[in-house]
Image (cartoon, rainbow, N blue to C red; front, side, top):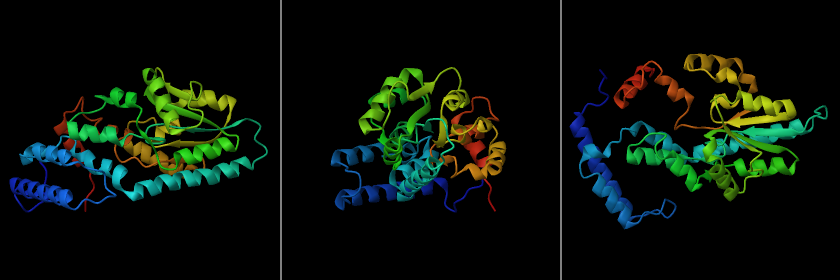
Length: 294
């Protein structure tokens, strides 16, 4: 059982929220901020149609809303991305000064939420009550993901400095052409057959990183998931991952550059490990169980 966090009955709260949504929608229709996303009157009518009943407005993926909006609306998200790539540039410059390096320099990057922003897919999951992998391949085939802030500028700088770029992703092999096309549309350097390395038989990226490490000097690794850096994070226990992060704290901002991702990741998947194929309601319970209050 959950402790109710509001003093109003739940139905009353839904009615209040519904009324607020209608007022906000009407207000946006009358006083439109030109800096906001362009919304046609037709789109607003669709929103009003979909929330005729307050209960129908609440998605099973409601827990994803703020995380997805953080990516799409928060200037702080963009600032964190710029900060990550600015730090990466400083570290790369320092590495380039090291004349003892006798191998060709490379940087390795994850793709999703590291160089490509998939928040429109997450938004679609919320609005359509679907979950990955439903419509994921359709989204990838559109090749319309935008660049994560700062990523393109950094990688063009790396190439101008003679550093090669490898994209190591856990997207499946059948999505390689679509992924390359998306990267190329945005102007990412070395977005080609050789430098875009897809998932093969296993989720862990360690084997693919080792192949590159045997041939090249890896100056930096970028990712949004800790397993993008080393296999010590290929763990399904969040407590262990936190412990290992604390042990390797000196590597972050030195060799590992992590990007913010509030929408999904191994950390969330690991929350559900206690249950076998948990339902949406069970996932809600499991999320609440690990919250630490005061």
